[in-house]
Length: 405
Image (cartoon, rainbow, N blue to C red; front, side):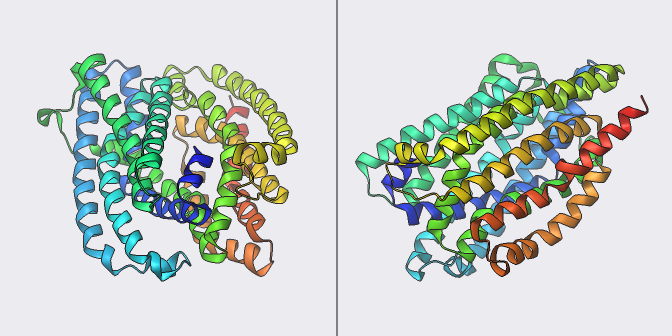
């Protein structure tokens, strides 16, 4: 999809699009931890075969997200015309009106998506990670189809690109919601009588910590495109993102392996099966080692892959690829222990580290990337350091917990 998209617009506009879409995705943190909190509480209710609680949790989560989404939409439309996007993204003022129009359209798409994407947390709780993978794959396929159609029927504008991307994702989420509640589990369809905001307390007890952790994740992992555009140029966003697209295959496939882990660990905790969790960690580490070898091979072949894949439209420096590879490996390694601890409900350490990294990340990135003159590599180094919880704290906490068992 990347070469097709770059060819549809151009490397600079593609970089602008990546930065704009990143800004929109920042608003995901307004779910105030409901998604992850729901996942944990649903997993417990399902393990206890408590269908009444399952219905209440699902209906309350949808109702809460609808209220938040409407509020976000109203606030955004009041402030959108006041934002100087060209200054924030370090781009020509000629793009200002186009970006305002683009933000207005895709934020509308996002607000609907914001509500419907809770189905992913529900599927995770039911240990149906394949359904989540299908949703993502189907959305990407639809977006690809829309871009192909737009390429041959419209001019290469940012607005058309935004509509193509978000339409695919939205239609995919609508489809999976209809399938789940209409055909698979009609007994769980959200209803007004099952809404119980008192039930939201159980979600928010865990969700509040997830909210802070999610905010930290957005600051750390969803600002890279904007920071690169701000500090360097939109074409640098394209270079970084192309490298990330290549190595994110490792993250994506390993993520598929990891998706059932969180809810499965919660269920094992309810049943007291801690020996299974210990064996799981050992097996996941062995799998990660295999992915690390694959990542090194991809790095060595990356110059040839980029030339074939992108037809020399974008120059990706080897040092950029190296930094992204190390970042992806650090993230995938951390996923093992973060997912297990999340499933156990052990969030305290992650919560406090998230507070620190959220405050320090942008100043640290400026110091490493600009003051130390490390460029895009500095962004990757900052992201690796910001993953202190996944790299150091979470593995140590896991070993501390299971040393006692």
